[in-house]
Amino acid sequence: MRNNNNKFTGSLKSIPTIGEATPHELTFQFNPASISEDRKVDYNFSSAQGQSMPLAQFGAIGNTKISFDLFMYDPKGLDSSLKSLRRLTLPRQVSRLTYYEQFQPHKYFLCLGSYGTFVGVVTDVNISTRRFGKKNFGAVNLSAGIEFVVVSQGHDKDVGYMKRTGGL
Image (cartoon, rainbow, N blue to C red):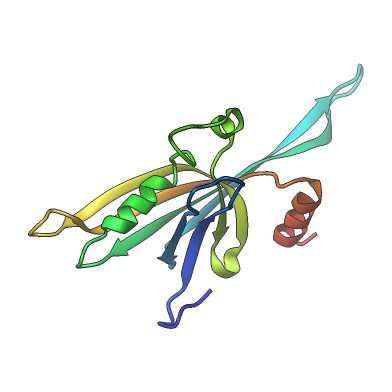
């Protein structure tokens, strides 16, 4: 997606659920040096007497993990961006959790322009502050490594996702 400054932007938007207090969105300029996408496949291997090689039967697609780095700079300070990055790995709320909310992850819709759109959870945020403001020691330049794991949305949507991303 492009914004009005002709810069590519990406976003992480929380998927709202019933009773969620405030949705969360992190919009960022997106021009990565690289994106890492890791997916494994589970096969069931069987062998019979007299076989020299086992037979492989498709079992399931493993998790798809997407990793990328964000680079942020603002001479006025990055306080709100820093808080937003930290929030990516926090629970939906921290008080009066119901039983289900204790185990329900904070799911996000990840949009990376023409690279793809994904639904999943943020499993890791690694923030490295490179420069601080002179007056208040607030971050003005940072990078953040993001790891995102795609999760199931139900059978029909999962099949649509495989067709869309794999060209089936």
